Length: 179
Image (cartoon, rainbow, N blue to C red; front, side, top):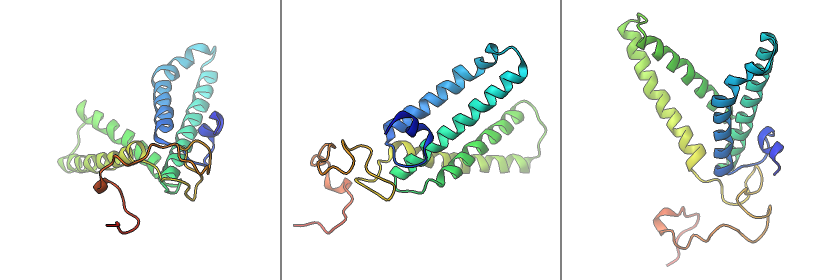
């Protein structure tokens, strides 16, 4: 899978390592490059336009790689929309919490609702992180394509290490165990 297809296509699958690498590059770009981009333009309109296009491209890359990672977990790529919505809601929520810490007047009921929302949002984000970064993808070919961790697509030889050293209780059984 070539680099452009990894970043911009919504088809296929990618493993945890490539997904993590892309996400770390997006975060680094967001933190270190994007704030300095306006310095390279002569007018504010040009800088705003270029930054807006860059942010749109970053959101596209994030959605495309998240969809492919979900495909690797044998889930629909449309879940990426929900994940992006949760992430954007967290930005709004934490913005509200920063407003509270700087003395914005808010009633106790709204504070309790924000606290409950924080718990729910944190649990949801924790599951998203576990799903995308820690759980392995479907072994072998699934409905979204071939296994990205194998050497060649659909090759009969598996380049993964054998799981003989894994205890039996950690392996998911698809058939009854033979005694």
